[in-house]
Amino acid sequence: MLEQLLIFTRGGLILWTCKELGNALKGSPIDTLIRSCLLEERSGAASYHYDAPGASYTLKWTFRNELGIVFVAVYQRILHLLYVEDLLAKVKREFSLVYDPKRTAYPDFDETFRQLKMEALARAEDLKRSNLNPVAGNAKKQVQGHNKLGFEGGNKKSGSVAKSGGGADGDDANGWKMENGHAKGSFVAKDANLSSVVNGRENGSPNVGAFDVHKLQKLRAKGGGKKTDTVAKASKAEPNKKITKKNRVWDDAATKETKLDFTDNVGEDGDRNIDFVAADQGESMMDKEEIVSSESEEEEEQEDAGKNRKPHVKSKGWFSSMFQSIAGKANLEKSDLEPALIALKDRLMTKNVAEEIAEKLCESVAASLEGKKLASFTRVSSTVQAAMEEALLRILTPRRSIDILRDVHAAKEQRKPYVVVFVGVNGVGKSTNLAKVAYWLLQHNVSVMMAACDTFRSGAVEQLRTHARRLQIPIFEKGYEKDPAVVAKEAIQEASRNGSDVVLVDTAGRMQDNEPLMRALSKLIYLNNPDLVLFVGEALVGNDAVDQLSKFNQKLSDLSASANPRLIDGILLTKFDTIDDKVGAALSMVYISGAPVMFVGCGQSYTDLKKLNVKSIVKTLLK
Image 1 (spheres, helix red, strand yellow):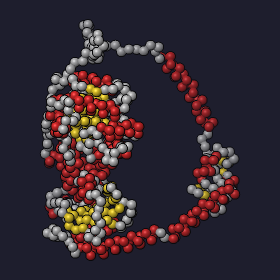
Image 2: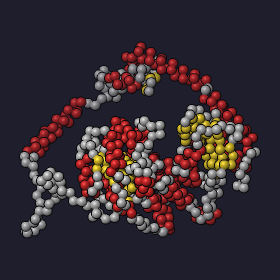
Image 3: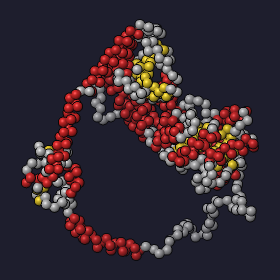
Image 4: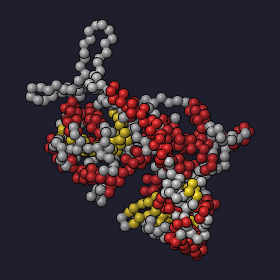
C-alpha cells in the first residue's frame, strides 16, 4: 500500500500531498531523502531505503527540472509495488499541466490523483496476469519432458553418442543422444558410421582429437640438450662470494666517509639521546592559506572543446549550430547530455575517481539537467560542466563544522579530554600523521598525550615513543599483546588526572575484511566513545577507496554493541604530495562515507599537514 505521495518545489514549498492516504510516517523519511540523497548528488539512484524504529520505507522520486518540482512516493519496503514508477510518471505529467508558479495549493488535484491511481493499479494487475500466462507453464513442462527423454535415451543408446575429445569430459559436455537425433547443447548424427569417424580418424581410442603427446616429446628431445648446457654454464658463472658495492671515488683526493646512520646514540644508562625538534620545525601548513591560481574561463572552454570533440560524431551545419546557440534549445533531453557526460566521466576516472562514483555523479547531473531549457549562447558541454562543478563543490564542502580547536576548548570547559582515534588499513601512515596533528595542536597551546593502542604490530610502540620524545609530550603505553580498548580507557583516565587537553589514540592497521581486528576496533570505539574517529587513507587509491570506507563503516555498524553505532567522522588523506593531479580519491572517500576531509598529509616533516582546498580540488578534477 502506498504510504504517502508528496509534491514540493526545490525550495522546500509543499504544493500538494495526498490527503486520501493520510498515513502518519514514522521518523522523517522525506527530510532524510533530501539531506542524504538529493543534496548529495545521489539523485540518479533508482530508490532510497529509510529505516525507522518500527518501520522501513522505500522512497522513489522524479523531477520536473524546468519547473523545479520534485515528486516523491513513499511505501513500505516489504511491499513490492509495481505501479509506483508508472504512477509517478502520470502524476508528473498531469500536475505539470495545472501547475502555476503563483499558486501554493492544489486541492482540486485530489480527484485527478484518485483516477490516476486506479488506472495504475489496473495496469499493474494486467501486467501480473500476463506474467502468469499458462502457455509459459506448458512450455516449461515440455522442456522438462525433453530433458527427461534425453536422459533415458542416453542410458539406452550410450554407445552411439559421438564423443568430443574422448573420455568422460566429452560425454558431460555434449549430453546424451535422444531419439530425435539431438542432444543437450550439441547435434549428434543418427548414423552410427558418421559418429564413429571424427576428422578422418577412427573413434576407437579415447584420445581422439587430443594433442599428440609423441610430437611434444620429440620437441622436448630437440631442445633439451641446449637448455641443460645453458643451465650448467650459468651455474658455473655464479660467484661463490657476495660482492659488496664500494663507494665511488671521483678524484685522487682522499674522501672522508660521511655518516649515513642517523640512529640515536645510546648513552651509558641505556637510554637514547634524542634531539628535541619540536621548536625547530616552524609553522604548520594547517595555519597557512593556500593560494590557488585561477585561469581564464576562455582558455578552459577552448581546452574542453578540443578534448570533447569526437571524430565519429557528425557535426551539425554552421547555420543550425549558430541558430541553436542564439535561440537556445527548448528542453534538454538525455540524448543531448550523453556525449558531454561520457567525456566528463572519462575525465573524472583519469583523475583517479572510482568508476562507480563517477557514474553515479554523471547520472545525478543528468537527472538535474534533463528537461531544463538551454540558455542562449550556451553549449551543452559548458552547461554540463557547470552543473558538475556545482555538484562537486556541494559534495566536498563539509556539512558541519570541522574546527577541532573549538571542539577542544569546548571539551576543556567540561573538564574532560578531547579524544581522537586514528583508524585505517595497514601502511597508510597513521602514526606519522598522528604526530603531525600533535605538532599542530602544540602550536596552538593545547596539551597533548599519545596513547599507544597498536599492541599488534612489532615496533609500533617504539615508533610512537620516538615521536613523543621528539615532540616532548607524554605517551601512555602498556606494551604488546594487550587489549587496545582497555589501554585506551586507561589512557583517557590518565589524561583526566594529568589535565591533558587532547588524547590521540593510535590503533593497529587492519584490512577491512579482517573480522577479529574489526571487532576489536568496534569494541574500542564503543567502550571509550571518542569525540572524533578519523579514517586515515592514502590519496593513491582509486576504486579501493570505496571498498575500504564502505566496509569499515559497515563493520563498525554490524559489530557494535550499541543501538546507535559510531561510524567514521572524518578523513585524513596521506601521501597527497605524490599524486600530482590524481586527486580523485578525496572525492571517492567523501562521496561514499559522507565524512569530510579534515587533514591532508603532504610530506615527511611535522609541518607537512594542511587543510583540503575544495576549490583547488574541483578545478583539478575538471581540468
